Image 1 (cartoon, rainbow, N blue to C red):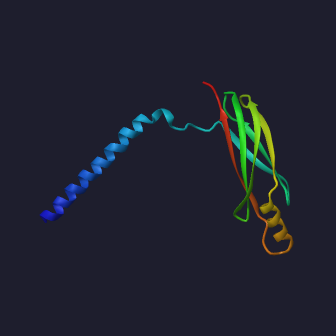
Image 2: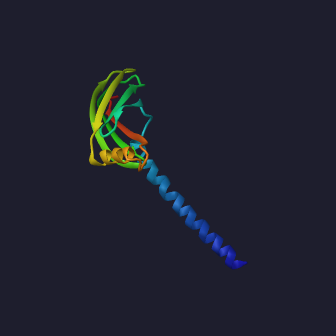
Image 3: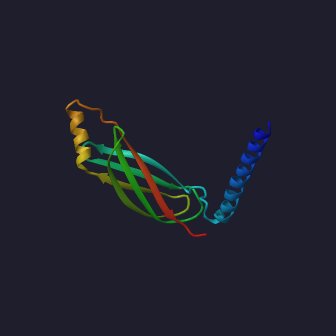
Length: 137
């Protein structure tokens, strides 16, 4: 009985110590926490065979002007990364919309398309987009 009580006290003391350390650490990082996103994106595909055209509509949903807006897109075919592309969008005024487009041309995309033509695999493509921007308060 005393062994159990001593073990419980030690576990509780260790838990209290662990809980106290992150609380003080999070107080110092309050200024660097991420806020709400100011944009919404919608992806459209152009012709997607041995080359793939990715078009993205970037909407600014805030009342701030966004500067230095950039798009990175990663194309996946059948769950495998086959290429990436990049585009500079520019400045988007408040509540405005801009279009970005980039083209992926890689050997692995061409091989995936050739495998689909030969009937060896499917050709299901999807993309992951990342849009970065700056704004001033």
